[in-house]
Amino acid sequence: MDFLVLRALFRAVLLVERPPFRAVFRPFRAVFRAELLDAWPPFRAAFFDARPLFRAALLDARLLFRAALLDARLLFRAALLDARLLFRAALFDARPLFREAFLAARLLFRAVRRPFLAVLRAERRSVLADFRAALRADPWPFLPPDDSLSEESPKSNEREDPGFDELLSEGSGSIHPEPDQPISI
Image (tube, rainbow, N blue to C red; front, side):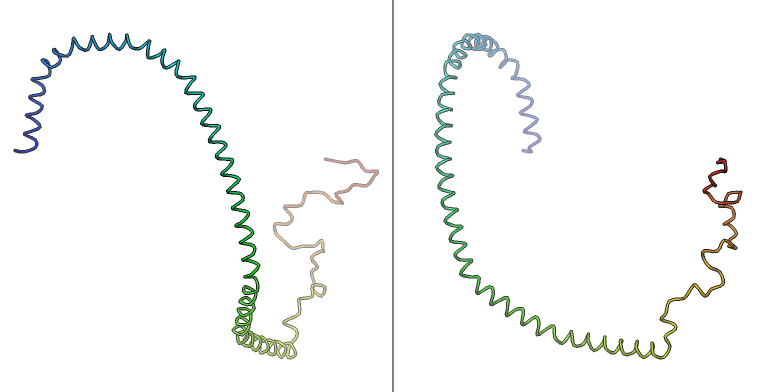
């Protein structure tokens, strides 16, 4: 049989059998509720009586747990201090080995670096020699331009900029008036 057929059959039986099942258990439901309501006050009283005992047991357990935790902390600290001392001793013993390895690596690095530096120095010398020869041949391209020889000084008041006149306000004179002149706004 197919699963869907079985499921449909089960649902049909369930729908048919549910009302008689409910009819049988309905009186028991009322009895169960009555028993539950009758049992609730003694259960609540027992719970309230047991609550201080439970709290006392919990406080005792907390105190025992704290004592065990403090003991464990002290043991852990002692073990940590011992481990630190052992680590320092091992590090102190290994320091000369580290130093020897570092010196050997540094010598190896210098030996590998030496040919590269020789190539860079030779390149720099050839470029420097070319620069010096070019400077001796014609020093003028390497000198900065001298503005004092130009016809227009940047400080002259006679500029030929087309938009420069718009920036200046009408009027003449200094922006600082003479002491005997009134200030005009």
